[in-house]
Length: 136
View 1 (cartoon, helix red, strand yellow):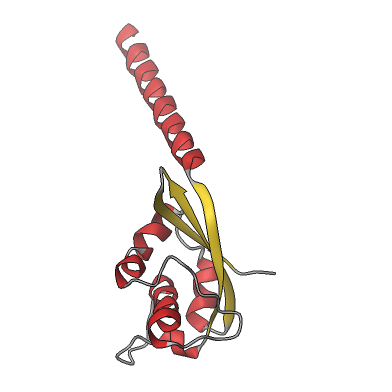
View 2: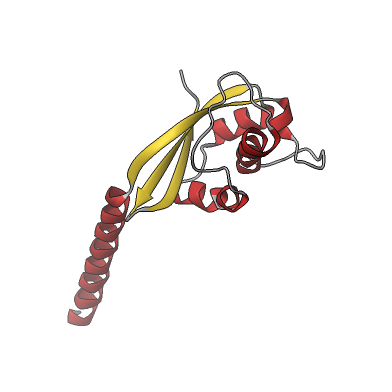
């Protein structure tokens, strides 16, 4: 019986340590800034003309369209972070670090013709996470 209590106590303490570490990690992320974008029809297709089927791919294509191809919709803001292809390639992991994109926002992005606001978070001076919202 004592062994069972010790195992349960140890598991409980490990869970508390893990949750505490997660809360410190989340608190260490600081919003750096963000940008507004309008997901238009051109953003739904990659440079080869293939229809994109993932919201992050579409958000990435939007940034490529703004910075590389000069396709700027009304409400598209140029941002100082995603002008390099390597930075755009890191977007998927950064959205995952930001908790992912909610299903309702994913559906809206996949349909296109929607304004979005993307927020960038830093931790120890590094870009670590992105979140996306639909204004309004």
